[in-house]
Amino acid sequence: MSGHDAEHVQKALKTYLMIGVSLLIFTGITVGANQFHFVVPVAITVALIIATIKGSMVASVFMHLNQEKRWIYGALVLTVFFFIVLMTLPLFFTLDNIGTAVKAIPAAAEHTGGH
Image 1 (tube, one colour):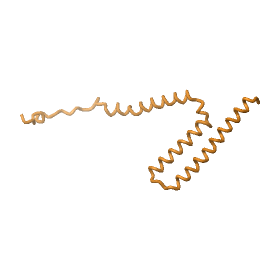
Image 2 (cartoon, helix red, strand yellow; image 1 turned 120 degrees about the vertical axis):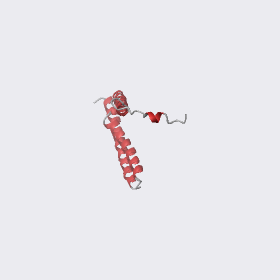
Image 3 (cartoon, helix red, strand yellow; image 1 turned 180 degrees about the horizontal axis):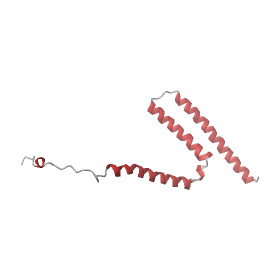
Image 4 (cartoon, helix red, strand yellow; image 1 turned 90 degrees about the horizontal axis):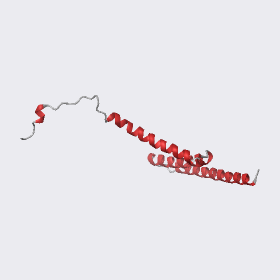
């Protein structure tokens, strides 16, 4: 093993240990937050924030997603595009008036003005 490989391994090991300790700390924060007995919406929000932080640490370091920025941004762009498509698609069906009967205005209703 060359010197460059050894320092790369040491740096990776240090990063893994730091993330492991951080995950342990956030697990303690999760247990501590559970002791406060928040109301349900606040408890869900706190739990999701903690889970998002822990999940992003695991995904970026242990799954090496921090080294795949081009692919991550590509997937993010596709996700946003398809989210917009899926949110606007129902509008085409709800705003579509083709095939619906048009209600005729009765003749008496047209002349109900005061003139």
